[in-house]
Amino acid sequence: MTKSTCGHEYTISLVQLKEERALYQQFCHILTSLLPEVALSFFIRPSLSRKEALKLVYQQHVDQALPLDEMLEKAHQCRGKPALISKSYTCMPLRLDEQVIGLLWIYEALTPANCNLAAHLMHVFFYQLHTLALARIDPLSQLLNRQTFDEKVLEIASGQGFLQPREEPDLRGWYLALFDIDHFKRVNDSFGHVIGDEVILLTAQHLKDNFRAEDYVFRYGGEEFAVLFQAHSDEEAQSLLDRVRKVISQVAFPQVGNITLSGGYTEVTDVMQVSELVNQADTALYHAKQHGRNRVVFYCTLGLAAPQIMTSDIELF
Image (cartoon, rainbow, N blue to C red; front, side, top):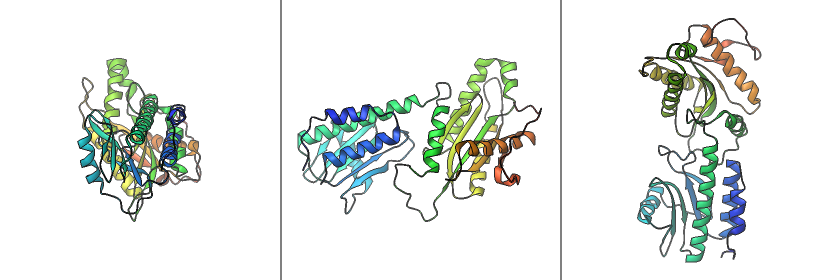
């Protein structure tokens, strides 16, 4: 049923990977190699966020899946143990701060040796995933950093996500939005850079709280933020971004009071380069700044035949 191995080569193959998608692929390959004829399902919260639901990452030989709620009920019985082995299943949860953020469900009882090896490799996978996640975080805002942005845009545009397709008839499309804090230079000049940094941090927190855990929020640079998010239509995207903008405009920031954001967005398609997408969102953002600030503009409403880089002496900050 399983291959005899001490797991050393598997462990090395996981810890040497520096890219999230490759790490997922390798772990799924290990499951196939280690348990080639066994029915199993592997779930995880992809962003390691507590507000995100467990999602199916990999499954093999499963004719009739057990409801996830029943799997989680068994996982909660594993406290203090790496696994729960029954006559008909083996349950292996991953925990972060006592919360289940991953789950490997095997539809038969594994031997203790195979169970220990699989649990060990799953934890190696998790700690490597957590390490990669920390390396992608901007230290001030705690958002994804600029270096991660291009990779995520390319991954989304090429449709190379690791999660199974959504079970809904009208699939959502991806959009890129750029937000900029209005008159941020005045904040730094009036209150100093320490307060300016606090404004960036609080704005980042509100942005993250008002998007779904499956969306991506970045600190793009300075007081500018990028968001890769999903919507069913351009109108829904506009409504979502306007709602977020209004929420932040009503927040009372310590010492500073209220601030506003300007935003621009465009749809992500598989025929566009990252630079072209960014230029479109940035052009729409510039238009929002140029026409009163505290608003969000969709690039396609500008009626531009081709991407244009605007220059002016208008104060953007």
